[in-house]
Image (tube, rainbow, N blue to C red; front, side, top):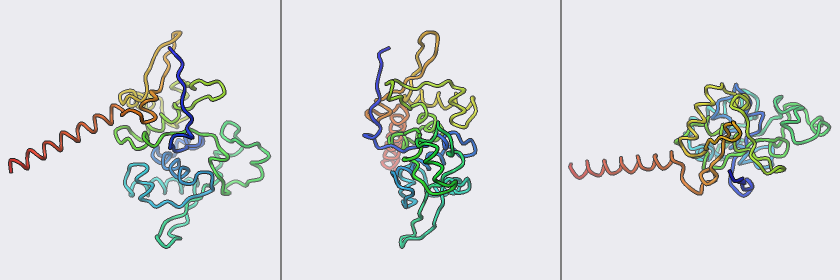
Length: 246
């Protein structure tokens, strides 16, 4: 099979999810995407102040669901929230240096000496200090695949820029790194395969996974999005027929 290369994520609007967040089995999958959305608004800063509606639009969920995700992050001490401190009643979200990020070379970009200068639970910038996975906004806003499948895809989409090849992990390791069971991972992979985001192929007796870049980077519609549009068009026509009859 010919080798394919990913484009640089810096050229594609994407959210960033730190590995420590991905692996936390106590967090909801949607909460992990919400954390990545807050990082998207903050960039390299220690916090951000988007409106709830803006977060909801980015995640393609309701503001009520956003409140649930935000409360989950606050309860697990990943963010500190200063509520309604602005005239338009926006909240300020600041990122806390959680224990899951502390002294872990596989997660932290910076040296031990530099991380020692920052106290546990102090404010910090995830983009500056942590390694993580990226997920393009076109995938994030696809309502036809589950939130958990998106988290799984973000982990699969990691790319080794040094060796210019895809990083493949076993299903068992993928389950551990996404904080879910092996049974759930198999379901998420099937969901992604049906939607056209990934393809499986065999080489040297091993089953490997390849990401469809045309769909992943939004150049072409996923099968699930095409199906969703088709269903919407059919329902619209049915409504028009009923109006004509009436």
